[in-house]
Image (cartoon, rainbow, N blue to C red; front, top):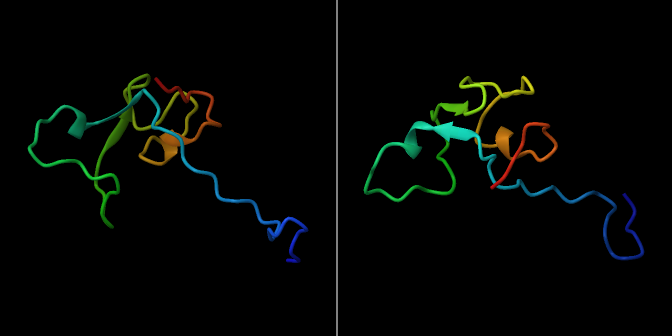
Length: 81
């Protein structure tokens, strides 16, 4: 791609994920541990998530529930505090 007059390449910057939806739940929210939670999960993340609205692994919009899936502001069911 050719450079733009402003010095950019014209490729859109990757969007930053927003905060997690307020209805996202996982077991770690209810279990006390002395270990500080890390921001980034390891290469293998076996956390099971569910939506507080549906109590299932899919949201009201029939989309998957997960760490990244529930940070998408374009989803109709997405709400933040």
